[in-house]
Amino acid sequence: MTVHSSQTTSNNDIAAWVLMAFALIFAVKFGLLPALISGLLVFEVVHLITPMIAKRFSNKRKDNYSKLWAVGIIVFIIVSLLALAVAGLVAFLRSDAGSVTVLLAKMAQILEDSRKILPAWLLAHLPSDAIAFKELLTAWLRTHADQLQIVGKEAGRVTAHVIIGMIVGGMLALREAVVIERYQPFSRALIMRISLFGDAFKRIVFAQIRISAINTFFTAIYLAAVLPMLGIHLPLVKTMIAITFVVGLIPVIGNLISNTVIVVVSLSQSLGVAVGSLAYLVVIHKFEYFLNARIVGTQIQARAWELLIAMLCMEAAFGLVGVVAAPIYYAYIKAELRLRKLI
Image (tube, rainbow, N blue to C red; front, top):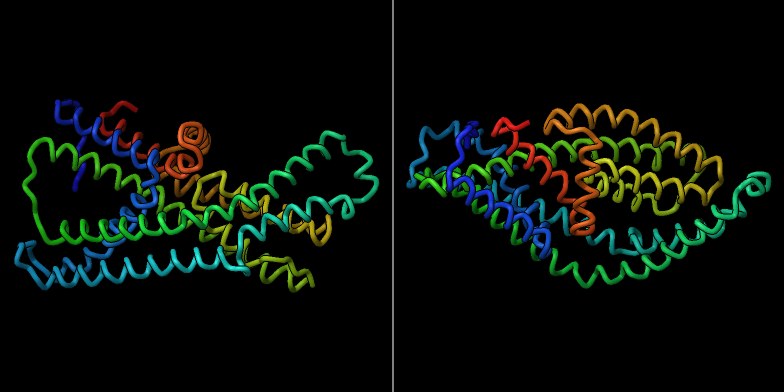
């Protein structure tokens, strides 16, 4: 749907904004964000592909069964591939080889043993508060390593939401591809809000997927190729690569999480390996920041500090799920403001 700017505001627009705000808050408040994201992902991916099919069909008649079948097959393939990818990732992270719980427990053990790795002259110059902080961090890691086992109880419900969201997104994409609707004023205003949100989602998520994939590629080269060539073999390499991609989908702070994990695990070998890992990751992310500014910044016209503030506010209001939703919601809000020429 083509978005046109307008200076006039009708009651239908106001009602659509109120309903949209309620729906977005409801999604993060009651755990429906996975369904929302998965549905939008399927919807937007289908939209990227259907123009190639549309070239073979001159109109959008309701009785155009050939196009209906063509788009339906694409929806089925996309939903199946995404479902398999999500199921595979969840299965890997819950397995013994890729368990996040095992990784956190390993990090806690490494932190406890770090005094044996660090040289005596360095330990002598460390303030006691730093050691106390390290002990607190170790206790936190151990506590959360046990608590992560509880996540498995929610995995079934979240997986069901994701699958239902993908099915709904596919059904909507299928309907829009083969049917032309004549909307009433309120419906038209609401569709405008949904179109803006979908466009914001496409811009921020697809851009972040590209950035995370690039970051994961270079990180995987370092962990799985460079270090083994030097005779250094870190534990749980596959888990760290998977975590790098998943948390890399969160702008800005995702890098901090993955970097912390890799540097701490590198301490299991030596201080030099940890410093080398940190230096390599800093170089990668210096390059990535340019990509971030070019890809995400140009897509939603937002700087890193804007996204950080949005994520901080959403985390305070909704917890971790707010951090995931913040970039998408913020991009949508900026799109609405730009449409009204307010920014």
